[in-house]
Length: 191
Image 1 (cartoon, rainbow, N blue to C red):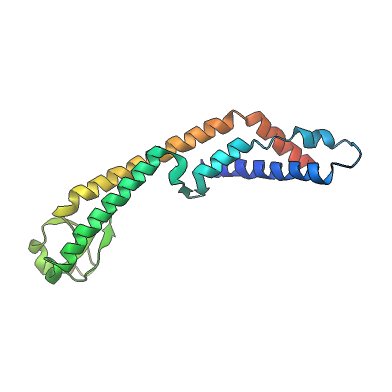
Image 2: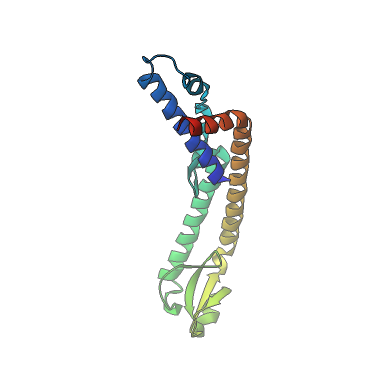
């Protein structure tokens, strides 16, 4: 998962710092028993670079992680913009008089508009929710059902692609499991 990959990354970045320190600070001193341990440290810089390129934080994967992810997210943005354009024209135009509020809201991951219950028939679409008093219905207008479906599908594709990216990174890290273990042990001992 993301957490483990970021932990490996931190460990390797610390390894890199310790190794750099040993070169600059200890370079002139007499050889001693720690030299071998400093020498054995493997910062695996290409691995950390790759993890940092793909993972921005505990909950964000970079668009740059794969060209596929970039494309999916671009399509999500385009679809989201289309939904907003359609809904804005409804909210500010034909449906304006039937609305409780001229806002666009989310219900069950789908974009809806708040329609006064007595005008239910005037705004064709799917009812996803109602206000506690029942005076407002949250309707997903027919005009955007397909776009909302597309967006849901893209979201699922995005999640799938993120899993692929994480699996690839984990596989890459697994190839260096021995070096990572040695780094961990050495840093603990040097500390």
